[in-house]
Structure formats: C-alpha cells, structure tokens
Image (cartoon, rainbow, N blue to C red; front, side, top):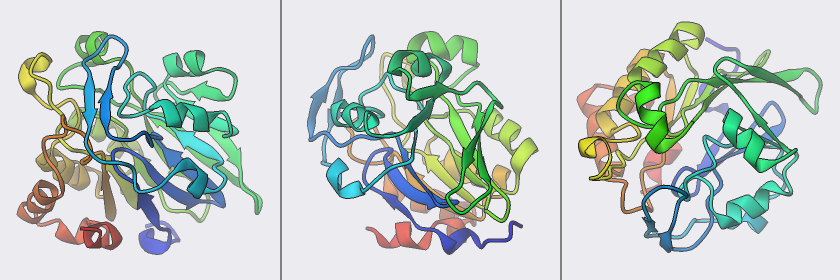
Amino acid sequence: MSQLNANQFPIRTFGGPTALFEYGGLRFLTDPTFDGPGDYASPGGPTLTKTAPSTTTPADLGPIDVVLLSHDEHADNLDTSGRALLADVPLTLTTPGGGKRLGHKAKGLADWETVELERPGGGTTTVTGVPAIHGPGAREEIEPFTGQVVGFVLTGEGLPTVYVSGDNASLDAVREIADRFAPIDTALLFAGAPRFPMLFDGRPVVLDSAQAAEATRILDARRVVPAHHDSWVHFTEGRDELEAAFAAAGLTDRLDQDWAQRA
C-alpha cells in the first residue's frame, strides 16, 4: 500500500469523461468536454448526441497543468470547448497519433512510455501510457474503426498509484496493467457501456458496469471513481447499473464515497 491513503485527494467529475484532480502538487484534467447538449459529428464516425451540460465551465476550473486525453478523435472525449482549453494548458498527454495532430503542446505516449513531471515542491511525478482498446476485440481489429486510445498510470514517491483508464473496453489490457502496477490505490474508470448498432454487433466500446467491477477486482483497486457513464445517448448504462454491478461483485466499498453521494 502506498504511503498516502487513497482517499486523501478528491476527484471532481463534471459529466461524461471529464474529471479534475490534484496529484503531487499538479492539477490534472481528463478528456475535456464542456459543450452544451446537441448533436456532434466525429471525423469518420457516427453523430453523437449529448443530453446534459457539463456541471462546470473551463473558466471555473482554474489553472490546469496537464490534460490526460485518452484520444482526440471523438466529440464525447474532446469537443470544441475542450480543444480551446488545450491552448492554455502547458502539456497534453495523449495517443501517438493525437500528439501529432494536436501540435507542440501535446505529447503522444505509446504503451509503457513514461514522462517525468517536475512537482512544485520538489521531486517528480511519473505518467506512464498504458494499453487501452476502444472496442471488444484485439487492437488490430478495433483501431481501424474506433482509432487509437491510451490510458495512464500516475506514480511518485510518497504518492498513491492512480490509474486513468480512458476509453478502454479490454479486460486483457487491464490485466497487463495490473501485472505491472497492482494494487492500484485509485482508479478513474471510464464505463457507461457505449454501444453503436453498426459497430461490433452492438457490443460495448468501453467497459460496461460488470466489466468495471471486474477491472476493480483485477487491479485490486482500493478506490474507484466512475466516469464516462452519463450525458450521452450512446452511454447505455449509468449510475444505477454501476452500483448494482459493484454490489453483485461484493465491491460496493471500493466505490468512492463522494461519487456515491453525487446522485
């Protein structure tokens, strides 16, 4: 177990995949999406319908040191407001392809590639790019349809181990991550079981609720903060399904108390 209790830092979720947390003195934001409800086109993909606004605005966030962007190609992970925000952020970590598309402030991370970030109080935080597959199958079968995605693991001396899953649907990828980093102190798990009838016979392209509970078990995650389960039509499972799946797996105590109270 890491020296810091997993519950010693808050994670604020704002709807969809967007969350904010401070870690090692640095402020991290995941997959920034702040546009209002409506229909949004994604390059080469289906039109996505947003049903609810973000619970905050970019102006209310304060300074962000690093954006952890699972991928840049879908409007439910990076929208117009989110792209504008990236211009004011010193560093965006994302996929190798996204790093090329987004410009000089972005860095792409391949699987297991690391970047060292200077902490304000001295020392460093390590961010490791970890495997993620945006659909139900092998990477070479999935990426031609849904593109590259990446997850992240954050570590540092005296800090908890944090996993940000990104848009991952693969429990095999979770097992690879667990082999290197388990136990995980805090897991920010993207869930919601998003489905599209024209893709993969309607199977989820990100974890469903039962898979999120199984990922928690595989990672031996001490605390789980679910994200990416609301505000979009293609998300087919929400809070109720997540709570039920964790209860069925005997893992209710792993769900973050603050998240559980934000009904």
